Image (tube, rainbow, N blue to C red):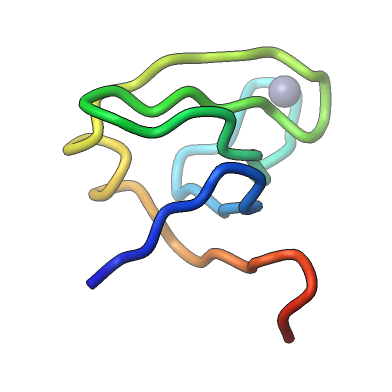
Length: 63
Ligand SMILES: [Zn+2]
């Protein structure tokens, strides 16, 4: 079971045009709101598409 929490940094297979592939989860639900860690751009993608492109995630405070 994938536990998506606001504030989690995730890596997506599809990287942002700015070159960064790290995204911060801002909101979860039917759609996932993500903020690019490189340029700060915020996007909204369907949960299904998000889960398919998810590579790794790390939770702040956990190693
Ligand atoms: Zn970016």
